[in-house]
Image (cartoon, rainbow, N blue to C red; front, side, top):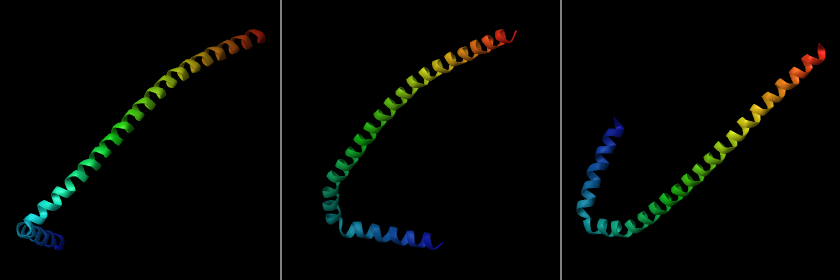
Length: 91
């Protein structure tokens, strides 16, 4: 309940402040807008770069995954051959 009351008071004071100091609000907005665009653009570029790195790492993992599957299959065949040779020696 206290948070609701505090929020309503802050809302009313904020509206009164913007109306009373409209010119100052616009000045601050004009000064802050280029900085916000700069930081937002830098963040978007960084996230795009990280996404490209992640896609490349996933492709490398997929290719190594296929190599590992081939290796496992060849080892399975080798084990089968060894078992067959062992069975033949025991007979």
